[in-house]
Length: 114
Length: 117
Image (tube, rainbow over all chains, first blue to last red):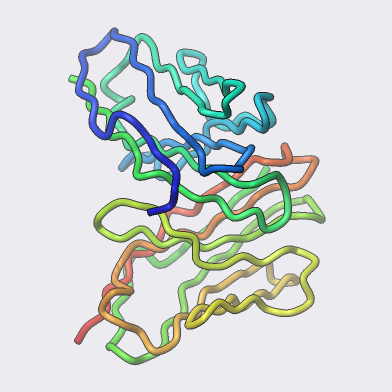
């Protein structure tokens, strides 16, 4: 158990809908990262937050948005869902930024868009 | 732009033997970090080992070692004394430096390792 929690574990929804994925980092970790893992795209970095501020953006679609709250939990919002958004979404956390700062991954949320 | 290349989609290794998983990278940043992660069939991502671009020595963590050849831009993972529990997908990843967006992380496509009894 990495100490990172993600809810829900599974999510099944329809095209055009909007969902929110939630992540609670390990106690004391200020950084939260979001990743998307799909069969055709592999593991893609989406976005990174540090202590409530966005620090880097990767291949995140405009239909997707994220935020990190004062209690450091983070939410990833996916809207106007398409079939291709079906994937495993990981959240990871680390103590800070830079250097080794090992990222601890949550168990993931598996999103299925029908 | 950052790029990670893992050229071995799948590999087999005999139990108790050593195996090397290849990873090459491309970046123009002088400062970067290289990581290896293991993803078992259960799906979780497990951190294995880290190498900083300025680290003088190759990183080691138990049975895992990273063969870092900076001039060749390679960061191969060596697993010694393979165990059945090592069967998993292995990902090489790079965290970029300032010019690439400091915290941007790029993953390779992965290598599926199967350990044979």
